[in-house]
Length: 158
Image (cartoon, rainbow, N blue to C red; front, side, top):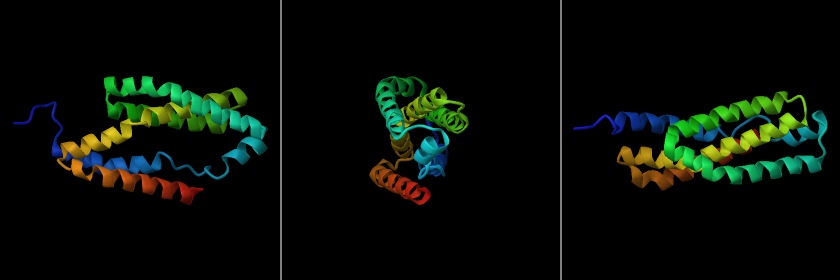
């Protein structure tokens, strides 16, 4: 008999149908190939400031890894990935509509937080879903295929 805490096979199969779409589309945006031009030509940043923004992004992501991992352990992978997606959407709005450099910098920290929330939670969600569906032997193939699709989608949009 199945207890309410145990996921049903149908739930896991549904997760496995939805997860690949999220996995690939979370990284794809139409500005991939022109964001530096946007920041330098339209927003007035120097190339050095763009690199500084990237450094802030990287530093904030590193600092966020442990707290976001603790968040995922406490609230669950699904909640973590939903939070990361919501913050990512807000970051895009802040990036595109920012009235000045400070809000642009905030958008970069939001992107970093979003990516840190995804980091590890996505792979764990995939593994847990496959394991619950009694298909955990397929994890490496799924993971590799999803990452290849992501790289292809980013290349296409770039």
